[in-house]
Amino acid sequence: MTPFTTSNGLNTQSGPPIQEAWSPPQSLLETFSGDKELIADLVDIFNADTDARMQQIRKALANSDFSKIHAEAHTIKG
Image (cartoon, rainbow, N blue to C red):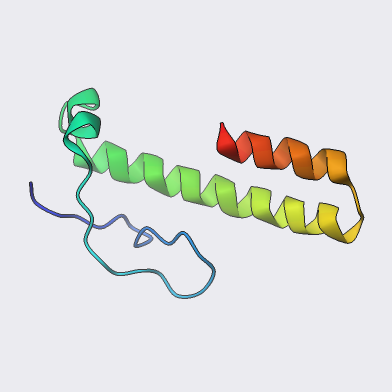
């Protein structure tokens, strides 16, 4: 497998993007017919959605809105 990096460097944390190469597991490649670009796009979408949900969780924490925290956390979890 040839390693690749998503457009945002698979940044899963706040701060600068992680610039390491990543290769998807074989099972994921098989599921997406080897389409690494599609996998990278889906990872980017997940990361963007997760960042937005984490912002909502932070706001909910500030407002002690525990039902919102619960809902957002379970949306991220899937």
